[in-house]
Amino acid sequence: MSSVIREKTSLELAPRDGGPAWLEERRRAASSALARDGFPTKKTEAWRFTPTRPFVEEATQELRAQTEEARARAEALPRLSEARVVLVDGAPVSLPEIRGVRFARLVDALAERARPLASLDAEDAFARLNATRFDDGLSIEVSADVDPQTVLELVHVATSAPGSVRYPRVAIALAPNASLTIVERAIGADEPSVASHTVVDVELAEGARLEHVRIGEDRGLSTAWIAVRAARHAFYGSRVATLRGRIARTHLEVSLEGEGAEAELLGVYRAREKDHLDHHLVVHHRVPHCTSQMRHHGVIDDKATAVFDGITVVHRDAQGTVAHQENRNLLLSESATVHTKPHLEIDADDVKCSHGTTVGSLDEQSLFYMRARGIPEETARAMLTEAFLRAPVDTIRDERVREALLELVGAEEGR
Image (cartoon, rainbow, N blue to C red; front, top):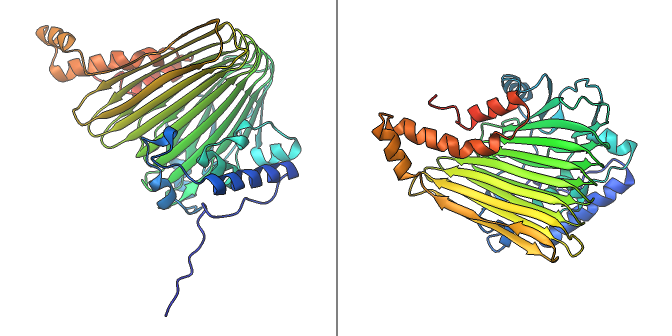
């Protein structure tokens, strides 16, 4: 009788050692919670439309391969900013020098001083997995001396070892009245069985302003958990564009913790072939007189699936809240699928809140009108799709980033 000795996968490994005592304690707590609750299933409300089996059965080994090839793929991308950081499997390759911005490897920054990383207490299974297993990452601390026109580009790329998984982690902190634009571009790996479980922590002090553009182009398996805490009169502007993914899930959770704080969560997604693109947004209004807006537009074609779940929670003391949600979807084929669920949870009485969703196809009257004027059908369809996707992208402040993203989502196609 023979036996096979099976190497443990990263899903079964104990929390990483090293680092300050407080971090080791938080890692152990996350590991215990993951062991207790396990991974989500179809019965888990927040995951009922998105399969998790490929994550836990296919991408389970912490392997590294072809690091130089991965770096070369990142460097081949046209630059969206002169200031760029490339992260290979979560580890920064090099760090630029920018006035008012302090970069460090995350493990060094956490050893130097405790950072309030809200995501270490996240209830999401894959955020917990990241907390137990991340071994490197990037810390970005921004002072009020930074030029408010500064654009920082972060490029996440993965090595292409089949069945491998990595855990990128980025911590961003803006000092009072600091202002910055950060563009994250997740290109992942070309191998569909490669997974990335990314966590981004954002801390905005009083009066800070961050425009956070995140472009998802990972063809494999990916989750991203983004946790934001905004102090008094801080502004967080999210611009998400998810353009492909075998299974790509983005969870964005914003906590408005000081009066006058604002969150503007805008996004587009364009699902093709058999893509599965999932967006889960949560905004907590915890104090009075805060404002939030969610607006996501999606185009779903072929046999692709999209999921949008937007939740605005107005807590008991959050009087004077203004919160609006909108999710609009275009289905370009009969086999395309969308699940949309914007909703409000309100425990205060002095509020102005609204939510709505639409699912439809291209306007046949507009299409007929354009064709009657000599515009070919394919071009007319492309033009109508462009107009549908353009509105959220047009809000991006930096022209170079805005035009590049319009091209990526196809808004310049056919011109």
